[in-house]
Picture 1 (cartoon, rainbow, N blue to C red):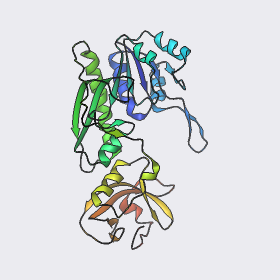
Picture 2: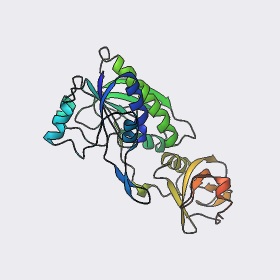
Picture 3: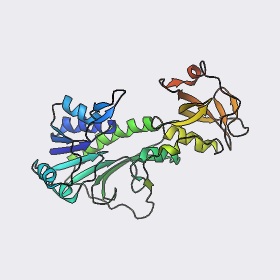
Picture 4: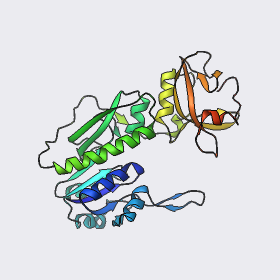
Length: 298
């Protein structure tokens, strides 16, 4: 099929690669390069970098609302557009341009976790499973009918990074299957019950509150790993907590029980990976060789 691909972050790269191997990718749309690194030089997105390496034409308009951008999109005469974590709202003129519409790869079991951060929110809320849905794009936020869906369990120790990588692979496989069966698949309207919204992660959520139950603290740490990273203050230093699991023991919230096992409002959490300011992520044993924990964390 003649495909326009629209995506930006690392999550979208395996999907682009799978489509490039199976179909004709006419053009790749992504977000414009952004300042990054110490020099704050413009850096292309992961999708742009991969598309250019594959020799594919790339466009990164700031908006698709203008008549010129919409005409350029329509002129591609695509059979279908595939959208995954693109970052721009698609106007009706763009949605209507491909002969068979626009398909979105969404990382949740719709209608649960519509919106910007479905992987983070599924872990933070303690969901037992999540998945990938291939849906037709409509004007509403992730409201379109679903063509294909595949569920997967969320492991007790999985972080957002772990689940992100698994779901990206599933999405790449599922979209190729969906395009191969497009004429036979029957779109199924999403249920009206059970709708939840995965709001964009706010950095204000990231500070650990040790008075919360250990299950919630553990889910927060894993759900915000690696970005923005749940954190706590240790002797004036902001230390990111990247991996954890529930542990035995109890005490006043924030009390250091042993190693990096911390008492919570109910139960305890053991931190197994952390990152000090200006340093790389490290196993806790390595972190503790250069960091002395107080008796109690705030």
